[in-house]
Amino acid sequence: MTEVHLANTSSGDHCVVLDIAPEPPELRSRLYALGIIPGSALEILRFAPLGDPIQVKVRGTLISIRKADAEIIKVEIRKP
Image 1 (tube, rainbow, N blue to C red):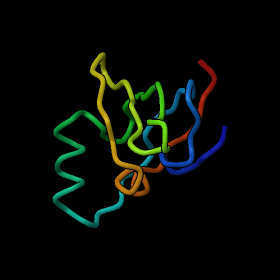
Image 2: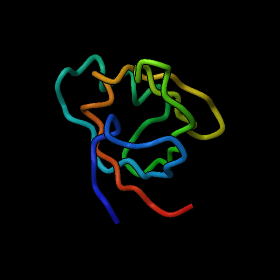
Image 3: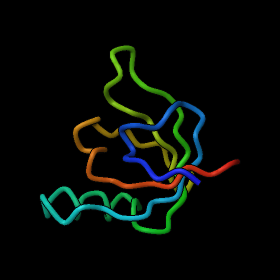
């Protein structure tokens, strides 16, 4: 399996969150509140026309994440 930052994934990828950087703490808290925590499964749905933001599906909910914010999320890409 491949480990990358969420910002470096592609549409259609299925991933599992491995780690979220501790800084900035307010962003980490916001991601946790949205359900993006280590061990959670993500599906990359699409990228906006200019590549930012990224739309992901987590626990049945669609979330848009800025590419800069996705840089702090380390994921493992898995086969669907």
